[in-house]
Amino acid sequence: MNPSIEVLITTPLAPSLVESLQQISPNLKITTLKANKPDEVSDEMWQKTEILYTNRILPTPEQAPKLRWIQFHWAGVDHALQEPILRQPGIVATTLSGAASSQMAEYILMAVLALGHRLPDLIAHQKRAEWPQDRWERFMPLELRNSTVGFIGYGSIARQSARLLNAFGAKVLASKRDAMHPEDLGYTPPGMGDPGGHFLTRLYPPEALRQMLKECDYVVVTVPKTADTKNLISSPELAVMKPTAFLVDISRGGIVDHKALIVALTERKIAGAALDVFPEEPLPADSPLWKLPNVIVTPHISGNTPFYNERAMELFAENLRRYLDGLPLLNVIDVERGY
Image 1 (cartoon, one colour):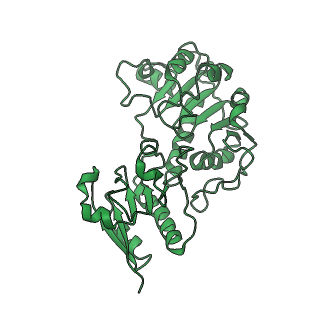
Image 2 (cartoon, helix red, strand yellow):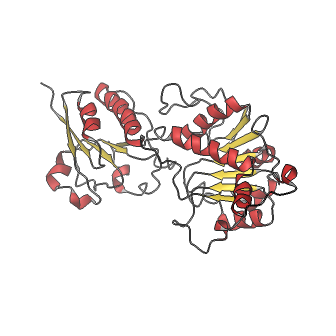
Image 3 (cartoon, helix red, strand yellow):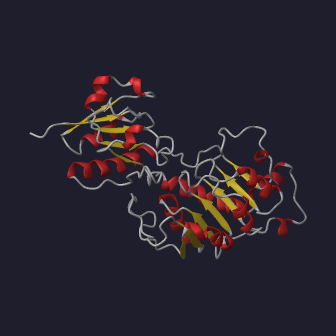
């Protein structure tokens, strides 16, 4: 008889989702425990846990000697990279990259359509009950058809966005750390994304980022937050963008230099932006971004969906089956790389 595998889930889940995991194997012994801090888990529980599914809390290596795999509840794990447990030999950690690609790609599509069709200006005139005489010129759209959309980072979110943009007739460019390999080896839900890189017109290495930016009507930031991506988009990058181009940021606060961005937006060096992430969150009430007429501000909600937990469990279930079969896990974190 095979020994049981202790699985600890510290994120609240519906009982039906936990039961679906339990059906994968009778050897899984799943414990659910809502916890916000490591000390809310008993020493006994930590001692026997082999698989941890967690939002943010992590044990020390001494607390969890049997731990072999950590599955995070989110795609972004920059908050956890310095934790000693992630550098412990024999422990693998994985993200939920791909689980949020559907709703975040829809957010990106919403943002580029809203910016390109002058929605902020349209709503401003609606609130003033104004029917502008120059409406044909003022509200002239930048159509997605035949436009060029450039992604900084070509992970699961960008790939699903590229699939949607392809249907609109847009050309897709992307900047990627390893530009020689367009394929995606991470988790891709069936019928989604761009696992083979087929929706791309061209991939650029990071060194050629500014060259890509010159070509774009829309620039979408989707890279993870690492030491290499801090202030990745600053004055030099914004300066090479077209004055008619728009920026969409759903990545992490600090990747776009907001001081430089505010200057570029105020001086109309770029046409506008849709921003869901900020260096300081909540965005301070005195930030100029709130009142700029060419900016859409949203409160870090691009990943929000009522289906997140269900999609998360689909990925976790796939990785559980792989773990039990001794196969490589999906979305393994490279701590040195930062994602």
